[in-house]
Image (cartoon, rainbow, N blue to C red; front, side, top):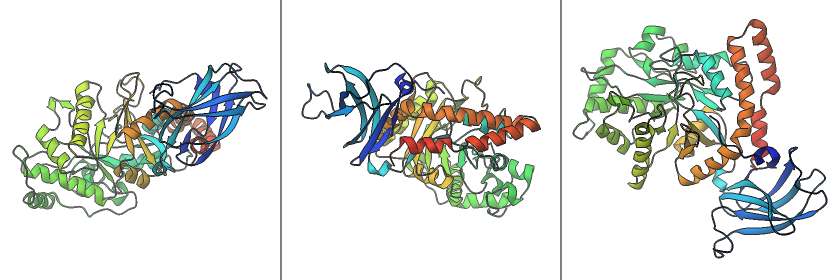
Length: 464
C-alpha cells in the first residue's frame, strides 16, 4: 500500500515526532536539502497549535496555542523544548516577521499509557502454496516485508507447519520481520454437521488442527516438530473421541433458535483451545459472500455476544463493500450496545504479488512494547490495536477514536519513512529465498549489515 506523503516529510526531518503528555521534549527540526526557508542566526516566531481545540480567534476558551521565539541554527533548522498537555496532533507553525506562515510541521502527543508502546504494522491472516495460496511461505514473508510489515503470520488452511517452515527458513537471517506461528483452523464434522466457520490461530504455541484427524495429521502425522513451536502439544486424540467430547460440550451450551449446539460447541472448543495454546483466536470475515454470507447473522451475533473469540477481523479479505462495510457497522453498533471486543485487519491474502487486487487491502497497527509474539497478542487483547483499510487510495481506519486519530498521523508521518527501510529488506529476503547460491550469500551478508534500521528509526521518532 502507498500512503499519502506530504512534501514536507522529505523537506524537513522532525524528531522526535511522538511526544508524551506532561513530559518536556527536546525537538529538532532539520532541513533535508530542499528550498531554503530560514536564515541561520535569525529569530523566528514558533506557534505550537493543538489541532482539535479550535481557532484562537473563534474559540478562545478552548483553543490551545503557545508562542515561542526560536533562533535558526547553522544547519538552517531549530532545536527547542516544549511540554505538551493533551493527547492529540499539534502543528509546529513557523512565522515570518509579518506573522505569516512559512511552514508547519506535525507532531503528536500521547497519554502515558502509550509511552513505550510502539506502532507495529502487521497481517494476521494469509495463505501460501502449502494450502490454497500462490507463493511459498518464504516468498510470502519477503514480499510482505517489502511492503512494510513488521509482523505477519502464515495461517494456511488446516496446517500449522507452513508457519514453522517460514520461521525456520529465516532464523539465521537478520531482518526486522517477526514471523508468527499460526494456522486457519477447520475441524471435522460431528454428526454430519460441518463447522464451516473459519478460525485463525494467531501465535498459538501448538496446532489446533493437529489435535485430531484431518489434513494436518494426514500430511505430517503426529510428530511434534510439525505441531508446535516448542515440541509440546496435546496428545493426538482419535476422531471419535474428539467427536464424543464435542457432543458432551454441546449439552452444556444454551443456544438461540437458528444456532445448532454442536456447531456452537465446536466453535467454543476451538477458541478455548487457542487460548490454552497462548494464542489469539480471531473470528474472520463473517460477511464474506461465499454463495451467501459465510456465517449466518444469528450465529455471528451469538458468538459475538458470548465473546467466544479474542479478536474480530473487522477488515480483510475482499474489496466489495458488504465485506468490510457491514463488519465495520456491526463493530460500531456492538460498541454502542456495550459489547466491546478487540479488532484486527488482515488481507486473508492468497497471493502476495502486487498484481493481486487484494494483496495489500488491509492491515493492523498494534501498539506494543515489543515486536514479539506474546507482547503483540497481549496488546491486542488489551485493545491496543486499530485496523487499517487501504482498498482505495484514501486509507480508512476502524477502531477506538484515540487510536484512529493516532494511527492516521502515523500513516502520514511515520510509516512512509519506515516502509522505505522495509522495502530493501524485503527485496533481499526474496533474493535469499529464491536466488542462486551466490545471490543467497550476498543477500544474507547485506541483511546482516543493514538489519536493525527500523529499530533505530523507532528510537529516533518516539520520545519514550
